[in-house]
Length: 412
Image 1 (cartoon, rainbow, N blue to C red):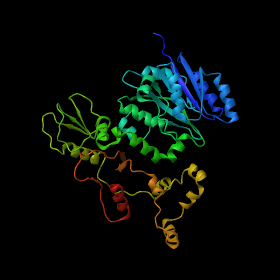
Image 2 (cartoon, rainbow, N blue to C red):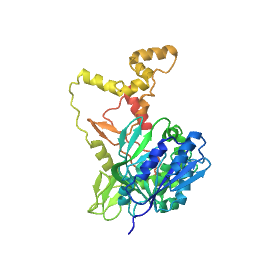
Image 3 (tube, rainbow, N blue to C red):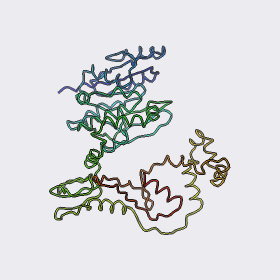
Image 4 (spheres, rainbow, N blue to C red):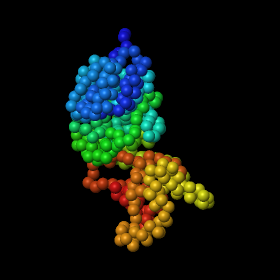
């Protein structure tokens, strides 16, 4: 059976010479049958047009259109692609030579696309390992890359990229639309893609309009984001409790429960064996609470902490040991050296609020520290009831300032 043809689509709007590097990485694939489709998305800078003219010589197909954004440019390329598999690639990013061959060997009928680990290059260099595909995790954060080996048939069924999303997140919305239709991704744990972050990127533009874009995506996909639908997705991809049973218990007070047959592997770390027992309505919920609040939690022992250790931790938390923080934000770093009581006096004298919590708000409560062990917070979906319930697990709760912050977190 001959090797399948794979199309690599590259949209470009006023590209720099980095486009030639992207084209070279596409042409250097070890997979023997590829075509490169280059789309000029309304470029109007003379130097960019010169680069595009040079790049077009290495493309199998060259398209020109008025500036309509990356979604429209990708869709135009997908429509003319002759291959059953397509890889989108931006004009300043790079594919490793074995990207297509590796992804092709990993894709199967049960998956719409395959993605890999990647390396961020440019102003900074670091590795990203997005991990296994999880639709529930994808609801809140686009942890996948836009680059993937994608079946053209799935692109057609999903209706292509949303051309209204010109400010960004069009890839996130597309992956969500595939997931909504039961078409999921597969992860290859090899770093085969290079994502460039240099200057003002489309990611920066998307972040600047984050809430606007998120609101649009959530309004477009009630089948994913409405409460009962979200709970249903969580029960499949990230259940609060896995119950081992021959028949599904219908009396539980929480929605996101996975029922597995004897011998199957549960997804949740909280497992409730109900083979030979009738479950009380709160059984799954209490099991989740007990497991979560007890994991890694040991009785506290008082021991002396060296002053140098405390000082190092405080300086690190304030980002005062980071060279990047000093070079990029020197005024902010100097301000953090001023004692808190002095800042209070200045704020009082100026008639401003005493505390500025903007620095602390960058640390979102996405994890909990218990006895030096970081654990994921408990998230589960109670069935609709007449009132909302909050479980706050804490060693102590009094009237002090730190406790007030805990109250704020709980109310949120």
